[in-house]
Length: 323
Image 1: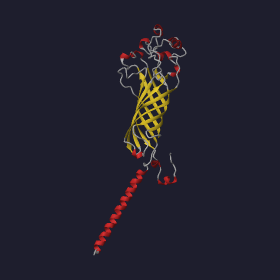
Image 2: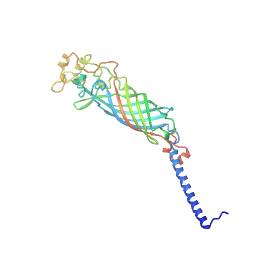
Image 3: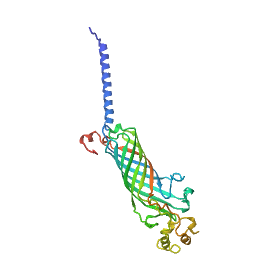
Image 4: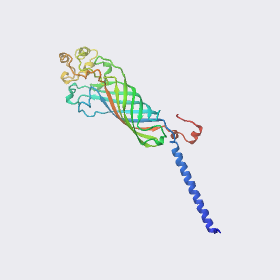
């Protein structure tokens, strides 16, 4: 016969109350934990990112591959919107503001470019559409993203092209001067290609590292293409006039910077330029050698999960759904 004293009964009731309270606490905690991650239990196909980094120009005023000229970096900033369209593929559209530049003074002496004393700087806007091809799947719950995912990418875009050079302490636009008498457009096609890596920092944020080379179809990112000025030096001299009183004297001033052909007052030595018959070095003169530039960026990508932007009340009304 089971016998329970009154005191034991009171003890059991108290312990049951504690157990019920404990179970209630665990249930509430589990529910809150579940709800806190519930917003990530579906795909988040849209994301936005921002990044910044270094930009390196390649052209008539710089060569990393052939000569020992070190890195001469500039800068860029970038924003992008991405969309998942396949198990391994994401598409993005992006905008970039970047600076590129080049100058002869630090050139390797073996390149024979130092005497030209040429330089340029260009600040441009670029818009591109790019496809990313990831090593690991990207179509899954946002919480289940891989911690590290490498990818390659390629795309097409358009960029402004506004090279400038400094003259008497001011930056002068070079494109309107048509120094080589070969007009080129303010807008150019670019073809971004490269590799990247994404690291999952949190449930909705990735760290991005990306190396991006832009191929172009122009040899005038730096306003230099012709091997020398032999084909147009007489036009430059006519525009310069006598002692710089011609209709456009800056064309000659910016085309010829070699100290050998500059007078003590800083003006071009027209007599020496004429005597050279235009054999003053300018660029490579190759028709199939286009300019380009490389960027290395560090940034953050934020996934647009519905749960981040909607509370329970908004969820019930089905408002603010972004896809």
